[in-house]
Image 1 (tube, one colour):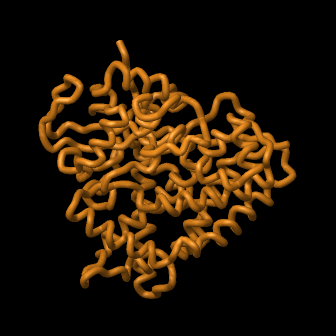
Image 2 (cartoon, rainbow, N blue to C red):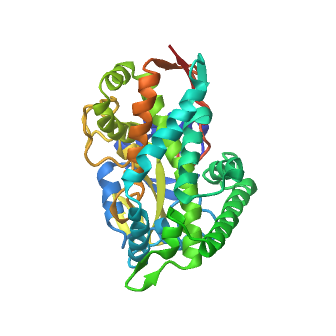
Amino acid sequence: MFRFDPYSPAIDADPFPYYKTLRDDYPAFWCEEAGMWVLSRHADIVTALNDWQTYSSAKGNLVDELPNRAGATLGTTDPPRHDRLRALIQKAMTKRALDHIIEPTRAVSTGHMEAVQGEKTFDFVNDLSSKVTVDLLFYLFAMPTEQQDEVRDNAVLMVQTDPKTRQKGPEHIAAYEWMANYAANLVKERKKNPGDDLLSNFITAEIDGESLDDREVQLTVTTLIMAGIESLSGFLSMMAYNLADHPDARRALAADPSLIPDAIEESLRYNTSAQRFKRCLQKDIELHGQAMKAGDFVMLAYGAGNRDERQFDDPDTYDIARKPRGHLGFGGGVHACLGASLARLACKIFFEEFLQRFPEFERVQEQLPWVPSSNFRSPMQLDLAVN
């Protein structure tokens, strides 16, 4: 009997054979381990993302939700409240044009690359991607640097799930509570001493006389720290993982950096770090012969939809010339990732510099240690040997 266990290390290591079985044989699958339906076909996921009235985010969007988060953040609200939050956050983020992060991103990237230059091997995650994303986030929020390691460690713990208990453990909840308290103190301090930074912009952003309240700012900052550190680091790491395993593509990018933006889109399709997110049904529906009831949770398996033969030709091939329209690497619908443009730009700048310095590299480990998470998929360590 087929089982799909999103907490299984085997799924973390290689989810794609399971995804194919889901798409072909069980497109609306009841997952006992998670207690929710799984949708795996691209068209069904896109339908769900565009129909928030049926597939609601208000009871949480993480497969294993963190306490007091559902219904209070941009990703866990539906319109019209979601639209208000998104407009205010978007206004705050666009106050600082993306052009303003180009040089800081290049500077922090090259600084950490220089630290490993000359090494025969290094850990891409812990030596580069994690450090770069932490530095960039601290720059955007003008956060004091004394607690960088604590912020990074707690952000990583927040996205994890205990594979044995199949839920968030005490250490994951404690990490979230630490981060929420850290964000609350940041907001309190910045209200007293506003500056020209993203956090100050969240506090002062206003549309028609309405602004974010303190709790909304705190939860937004908490979520963005988690996403900014773990999601962006995972995004960079999965791109490096793809290029390590596809030397022809890597050499093409090293020879012609103008190809990097298309390669980023293909990496987001082929091996996105954002694998699975949750919705809650607001009415009874029937899909692929399955009666799904109002109140049931539904897992949208982005990673499966991105390999769907019904949407993408030869989907298990990594093709940097593909231009994959409609991939789910940043979700979609009203909840499409608000930081997508920033993430794309940061990744482009990083790999322009990285491939100039390290045009030849390969994976050292045959089996990678993967972040234990029911939502995300990225390596905890990625040792590269460089030539």
